[in-house]
Image 1 (cartoon, rainbow, N blue to C red):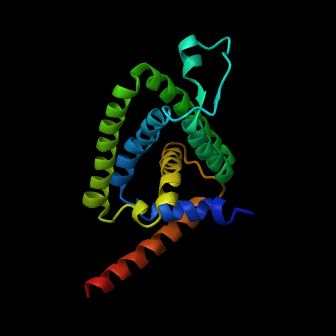
Image 2: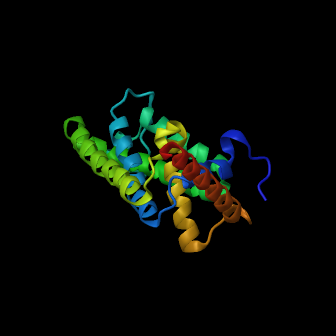
Length: 204
């Protein structure tokens, strides 16, 4: 049973909100494929923001990677997501946090290799492909507008963790705590039913 999780770190609330917009298996698969690449390519572009602090060289890390590790908005962005996920759930959140920071390291290295003039073109192309895929997933399969149209911040924050939890649940049967899936599924079903009723009222 979930204890002491309310408001900003209420995992049930966040997961149910996002899950209500992603109940179709094909749409979930599309998001699983495209959400983390959006996060990763955003970090590539964020690498070119002003530096907050230059890390000193780390002996066992290759010099090219040492040069890439700059504490800038990209680092802050990745760290913000990482801390949020750990607060939501220690186990899966720690894994998500690790992925966030690995993405920051990898994106920083790629950004240095590409340079700004090429990096923004690569990021633009990747983002267009990923966002187009997700909007098609909603329009063709989910038949519901994306969550970001109703709650932009919550949708962006939850998307990477949602798809990771979906994978962990599907492959390993993972639950943050006993009864989580049943509770969230009931909330999702209720929200979808309410949305369908509101939709029918607008049509009538």
